Length: 287
Image (cartoon, rainbow, N blue to C red; front, side):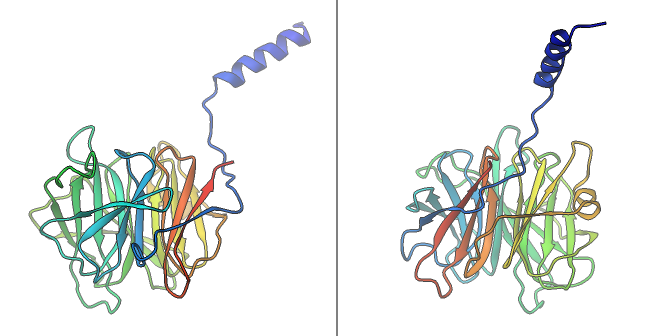
């Protein structure tokens, strides 16, 4: 019979060898940072930069210039990047992650807004993330697509870092729809997105993956929802067969943007200004 100290030591060694699972607890109140006045009043999407630590790329809603703002964690805008050969008909979200070239992070800009369901065709602009703000933007590719079930409004674009598949979530239905554009996405023809079914949410305004693909966020005007995903699980299976967790969220005037930070140690939210006196960048740290 083994002695108790031997058993305890063996249990300690086994536990130490197990892979660590990130905690699913986040701070109940965010760290709030005022954003430089007049610079970003209609934020519709954010992602944490991979090449410029301590800053986020921010996309603004339709009608604004075809550019991205680089927003520091301190709330100051470090610069703006014009996206050549594009227009901002109705940009609604942004994603970041792998793409055609190995070991390169790409920005994916989603021109998917359609309040009146009138357009029928939509676009995602893909370009390599600049290394710094003095770099000229790399070549911009245009991924054009339509839905298999007609025109609709959407504000959520997500890139699966495991597969490079693109996911879009519609906005306005009583139960929103999930769509996929599988990798590789052609830039030479009009694609038809694959319909993957419904999700029991409405007015979904943003979402994203953790950088390792193991966690998924969606947000609405009223809340933020989280799914965990195993290494063998599809996105649709994770989101449709498991129940989402409600995450902490301080209500924002018109909250549309959400993303994990680059090391998955927390998540950011950013609102349009709407009727608020100022915009704040909110950060919820993992506990």
